[in-house]
Amino acid sequence: MSADATSSLDSIRFDGRVAIVTGAGGGLGRSHALQLAARGAKVLVNDLGAARDGSATGAAPGESAADRVVAEIRAAGGEALANTGSVTDPVAVQAMVDQALSAWGRVDILVNNAGILRDKSFSKMSLDDFRLLVDVHLMGAVYGTKAVWETMKAQGYGRIVFTTSSSGLFGNFGQANYGAAKMALVGLMQTLALEGEKHNVRVNCLAPTAATRMTEDIMPPAVLALLTPESVTPGLLYLASEQAPTRAILCAGAGVFAASHVTLTEGVLIGAGPDAPELIASRFAEISSRANEAVPASGMAQSQQEMAKVMPR
Ligand code: NAI
Image (cartoon, rainbow, N blue to C red; front, side):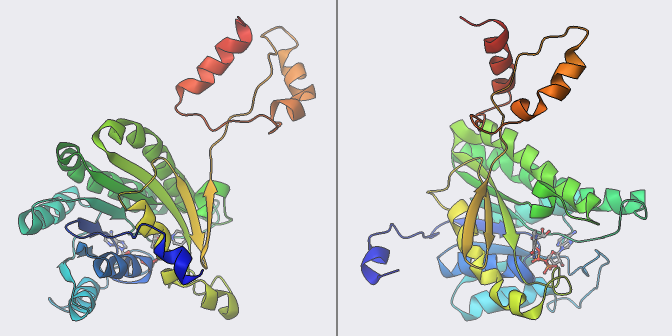
């Protein structure tokens, strides 16, 4: 992009803003925290210091992954605090939010990023491995969001980002637990974006692709070299900014940005007669045709569309 084109853009800054980034001791969260701080945000860097599968690795006080990222931010002239609580512990998550509030008096941005993997085919996956992934990705994000929600509403300002995944949006072999938890975050966003709208609390999802320890053994080195966390973070900065949209699913990797949508096709009136199942079967191509599909503004759109077909004006 030319210098002229860049200077015509409104710059995205976070001066005076307070951000919490979970799982920010490494990978994507570290990149998000560094960039938020570089653009003026005070950042609470949370990280439990977990291994990729969620087992705690443990670190001496002051030497945790969160502490190291805080040191990086401070060395670059930024302001940050470390927190080593687990997002799966609602008491620790409330303490994390209280830590930011007592240090800085507000919380403007919550980036729910902490995550783990327990990949296995569904046949081999234990229910414990399923439940753990739901606890970390879904409930971890719910606890953080619940703990900041009233503050953001009272402030009349909030930006919440959930880290979803293409594995949830589109499926991925061996990731039934991870994919289900990640797609649940899209459902959470859909409703919280509606409830937050009048309070200027905007809620979005980021679906990243990045070379981190999560993906280091999944993709070849040449691909991983392009998939830097730093090439995802611009998307996060936009979703965390004053200019943020709401209810967006932003897919980001290697500097490529795309949007994903949950859509509704136009629909076909089949009725409920005795041959309705056979009619659905014979007209399924038409039913699922994307020709006039829409992105509904809320769940009511489905019943409104159904009524419009059954009771045309
Ligand atoms: P990562 O493993 O480098 O970072 C995850 C961080 O979360 C780690 O530092 C870990 O210690 C922390 N963490 C884990 N459990 C925690 C807990 N209970 N409480 C607090 N912190 C905890 O992985 P990466 O790739 O940076 O992942 C970040 C997010 O992006 C995750 O939610 C992941 O599922 C998501 N994601 C990553 C993709 C990729 O291509 N790397 C693709 C799609 C989604």
